[in-house]
Image (cartoon, rainbow, N blue to C red; front, side, top):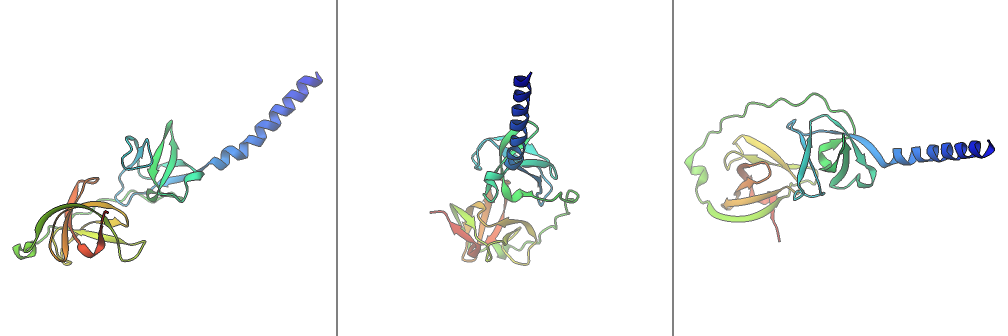
Length: 188
């Protein structure tokens, strides 16, 4: 009887001691994308990793604390175990999903496209401030509507350029437009 009681106490003590350790392994975070789209979960912490699932906007996920502060985080959700970019996760429950706004129809003048030469190289977005972003526009002019914004480090392909502007293609989002050359850095 004493051996059974001792064994039960030891099992209970061991179980209780593991509870804080398990709780310390993960934090709850929420998917937040500025466009309200789902977040891809990959099998490896890289854009080259295979997409194994996607998590809808606003969904709570468990994040491995060992990865917090990195560009990529290890996430767990309903049997899915993979990696997401940390910039699309927040610690608070986001508000309602953003509604798409009607995109302005760009006004174009053929003189905007004078002086462009074809090229092909990869470049990274480099905003003037580290936490900032750079506009992708419909045409090479600051007066043209913004198509989307890109944050520091986004990888784009330059397909033509003049002295001030680059025509770019975003392979990930399948978007193209124009960005000021001064906010792009070539890949070595």
